[in-house]
Length: 246
Image 1: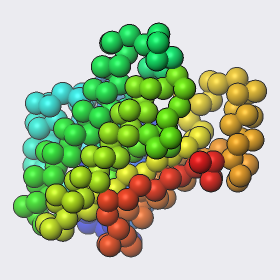
Image 2 (image 1 turned 90 degrees about the vertical axis):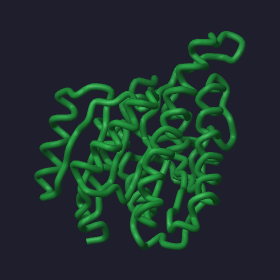
Image 3 (image 1 turned 120 degrees about the vertical axis):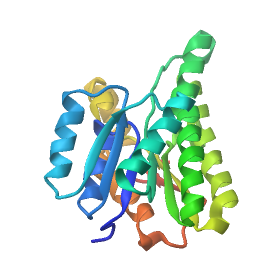
Image 4 (image 1 turned 135 degrees about the vertical axis):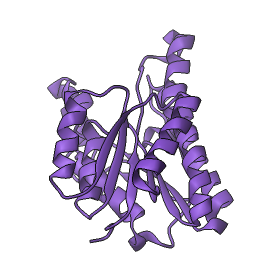
């Protein structure tokens, strides 16, 4: 198995893409620590599925944008698992609206929930990985962080920031054996996209050369590649997962 004996910390993993990543890594023997804002039936369900794969798993209630809470969480995960070999920054939110209508709160919430949370965990886990002299940090960005999108100025800015954060982290921590990369999903079929009108979803599909939406598992497969030694010489990169839409 590609990740046997390793431990991954995944933020915002109770559903959607984060859940798929947790299950995919666990399927390769990886122990999983994951966070969500609160423990719930969703976190209990994921815990059961992960343990059913024969790996160690634990869930933590954490606001990823809370700096002090993140430091405490990382220390606890290290205590519970002994090491953190892989970090997946997946926690994030949207507050979509046109720029001229966007409130200061909507801007601040998204930058805090997406970019600050990635900084918090990258810094805290990065210190541990420097001592270990190894590790892989993977952050969920988006194609809108590369190209922008009407109605998502706050989200696009946060995801562009994540891309820059990973590129800078790769340069700063590479000498300690730590890799940092971003993945940029396009139109992925999740609870968030499923509520869109059928006509809107069809319009998205029409723009994708592969003529289908991506799945959370499509994203998880790329994260697995970046988490494993298959990508031992890959760092500072942004991998688009969009069916050539961009």
